Length: 407
Ligand code: XIL
Image (cartoon, rainbow, N blue to C red; front, side):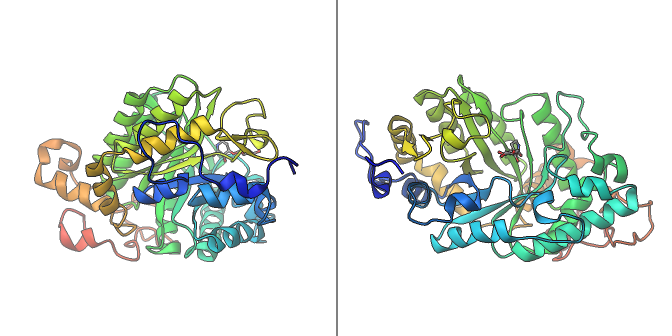
């Protein structure tokens, strides 16, 4: 504990350098006012002492948390069939005591999944392990999680498109991603939003375009997807226009965007303002999550200059925090109003809006294409043993309403 700083001071209103008056004095209040989730990645040991400087700052400044590691595959199911929810439960206890929200990270990844990797050896074992994991972990946390990173880092780098050759893909086939989304919707119902989350896709580039195309295919097939996560592991020199344009094109197909793992190496005030500005310009940008509280415990290293606090007893970087407060206080009210409406949409119906809009204007291209089978996984036309070619439950309202899905 830093002897000179009482923890409560970290939560006090910060000096405001802007010429405008601030209405909110914490990042949390400022974000609440504009319908934005403002989050941090954390670990149970960091929030176990509610009066620590860390915990006091976390609950004062953030309205959302995500487990940095403790809800990953090898933390929650290791070995296969043996489940452990204690880290996630402890973080949730902190979240719930402080009326915050929570993201779930993650079900399917090539990393930190050693227990799955050791047990998956072919398509059948892969699908079975995938489904059991999602049913179990999703079932346990389903009423506690707002946004789930169902899929993490699945896309090939560069513009080649397609899925990375991780063990889920090599054992199950490309349709593992569709299956994970379908299993997730069934396991959690409409309690949370389903995401695919990736890195180096923050701006408009070949990789983000391949993610966009993948998302369009999911929507077209009726595979449940609500949002895309951009990790935003970035370096100084943030290009606001580029990131904003990328967020927008996902909004145009009805999807939420969350900036899920933000750290900006050697960041300046201008970088933080630019990244927040890119989010604020888009009603579908709903979550802004920093990957940790303080540089001292960043996965990148304590000299990264990449988060909003530094020091092992966290000290706020007031210039950055004031810049974010200022940006949020001056968000365009019209965009804020749209975001507040958008975030009310029930999970599972998000992309319905894009489908119906595009249905009215078939010239927009991709929705004009012929319908494809509801799920392309499993042998064509056969009823899969896992029931993946049955309709997703709860049945999406679009299936009844729009008449553009195959029956
Ligand atoms: C990182 C954690 O921050 C580290 O503590 C851990 O050792 C490795 O994983 N992309 C992701 C995150 O999706 O889960 C990773 O988190 C960082 C990169």
